[in-house]
Length: 287
Image (cartoon, rainbow, N blue to C red; front, side):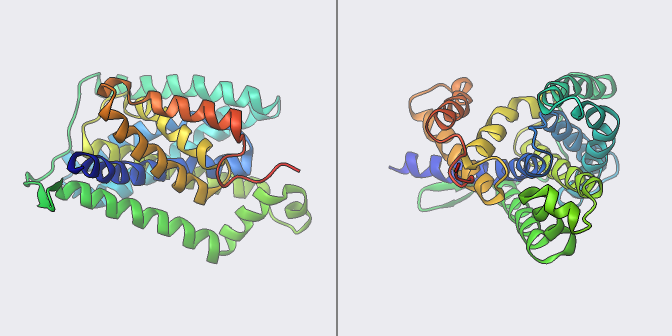
């Protein structure tokens, strides 16, 4: 039972971290109506931006995350304007395929500057905390707190700011939003910046828990996408529910699977959701 409790605790922490980029990809889908798979490489770029800020400029990890957010958001907006926006006119399927190609290109940009070596952040060495037979690291607690703050900021932004309400209006009914004078292009740029910025935060949080290389985001994309699909693409609360479910399920799968096969949980989750409930746990009902 202690082992199961430890895995559930690890799953909650992992799921909370997954929720940050999952919110980003689901927010982009809600407004632009296509899954932007470039989130994986932009998460990696955010992780490396934070790495440079932390290791080269001596910023603490919590402050370096802001650098990762800003650079990932900027890359997200620029890449969408130059690469994906023109292709979206030819259909959203074409844009989704183009986002996969963009992912490969951006991964190689990271590889050109940083090589393929594993890199670690400059973090203080601290012993794990123990309670009730469970173990948790101080960095895990900090990552959890940062992820919760990021999610709270998103919910407050969507609920109480004018731009947040405009984003929700465009997601709910683009035509009506246009009639009301909401600039869909401006909303698209802001949601791209915020969504990809969240991906950058997620990439750095993953790196703080382990290490980073040019495939950091690629290895996590299946779990991130599974969380968004499970919760319901386009639903921000659904992304959180889906991420926690995937995080706990992946950790519990270690009871019967070797660690390299834990990513199969995300694949199975996507198959089950697309078969049994295509709109996800909290997605809109089909009428």
